[in-house]
Length: 145
Image (cartoon, rainbow, N blue to C red; front, top):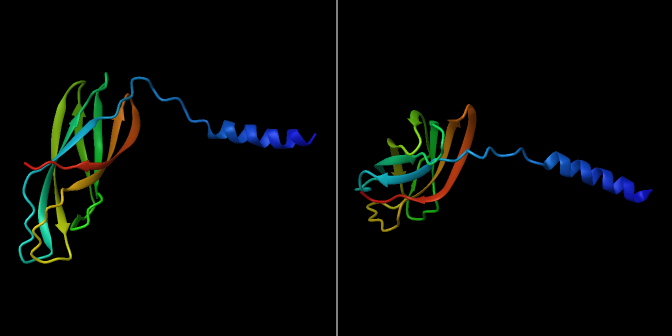
């Protein structure tokens, strides 16, 4: 009789943790980021930074990008303030588009001449086939212009 008391909660917890099936045609958009200017801190602690975030739709259905959030990656010399923007980008299958986002970088060292590459984390909210999705991209290296 004892094994039944252990087996029943185990089966219930396994059933409760089962995830919903993922749609076979759901595919997250690919992203690429490119800095539009070089960081120049001058004699201050902050610098303006423009980042072009490019989206590419590899899915078979259209994707509508609703929001983009950029967070700092694992950088030690400087960092950036988090930024979230609502965008309205519709991507047909195979299409690519870019959105330019203006950010602020900061450091605690004046006159910093950095040699560390810019690394960001991105969170993209998008709609595909009437369903909403949120994808996170970790440690995306931002290429220079």
